[in-house]
Image 1: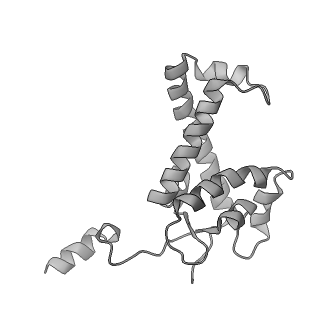
Image 2: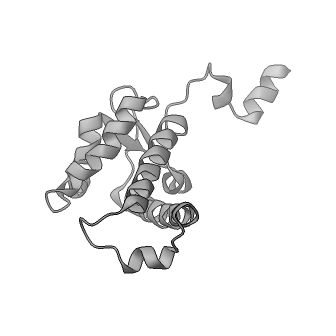
Image 3: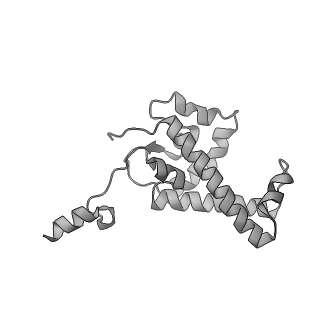
Length: 162
């Protein structure tokens, strides 16, 4: 697979964009469902004392990330910065299992003082522990399946019609 791996700074900025966006959107959804404001969620959050709305938000994070990685190969932050999560061996879209493992493995990357995320700085394929466990890489341009009509540009489709 001849790919350029996404630079660590790009991945960090994408993560920050996703964190801000998802926190605001899911905080509002949680507020509507549980009757709490986004401000109150930040003021009374204590480590290991999560209540139902916090579990609900984590479930939303999980669900949205997994669906987006499988369907679009990226979350909003990665899309903005042109980064895509792909299978490490084939360069194709990840499977549902890979996406689920990748999300859950974020906790593995976080545990040893964030070493799993810092590992991206030294790894030749820019993989964190979560990428290695899920067999994924983050690249700057995904491999496109040319036989899949949804992967073609408008220009390609118009050219084929002539």
